[in-house]
Length: 234
Ligand code: FPP
Figure (cartoon, helix red, strand yellow):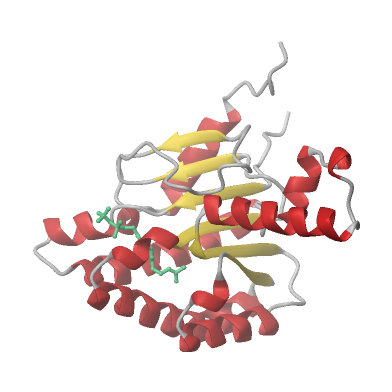
């Protein structure tokens, strides 16, 4: 029997800073090398037939980092987005973003919009960047909008179901991730896709993100394929 490839993989890319520190380099050097891993994993997912890859690129909490690092990350995003659009198009990959995008620096926001617009017609895989994202922000936002709909009479509160909530999240048109990967040995969700990961399988690896290769992705998928997913049933 052919083994099942997860339709949606989400990744908490962690360990850039520690990777750089171990090499006696600045944290930003780790982020630069993290981009190489992003490229490799995007390609690997497209090759094996994953339909959605969501990357936690910048959390709401990441604004608390030194401004030098925040600026470097935002600059790296602009640079990477501009450099990779052609490759995304060549590989028929659509770019999407989730998070409070209007809260991003204007240059980053603009590059992101341009990237999404330029790749909008692609349909082999969707690469979703979580930027200025946190799950609690998303859920809070959804609750507010649902409350507004109830207030205006467009929605009756007794008709609210779990599906209603899913529809008001920024992930509304994305299936839930079947596999969540976190690198660098940490084993937590850090406010990432909390609602969406209710039935996800988790894969934790000690590998720092810049060292994460195709082979590691294949290992994570193989681990997923050996899980017995029961969704609360027997
Ligand atoms: C976690 O490592 C990484 C981040 C917070 C940022 C991830 C960003 C990139 C890989 C670059 C830009 C991404 C794209 C999609 C172009 P950390 O800094 O928390 O590492 P540490 O835990 O070792 O300090």
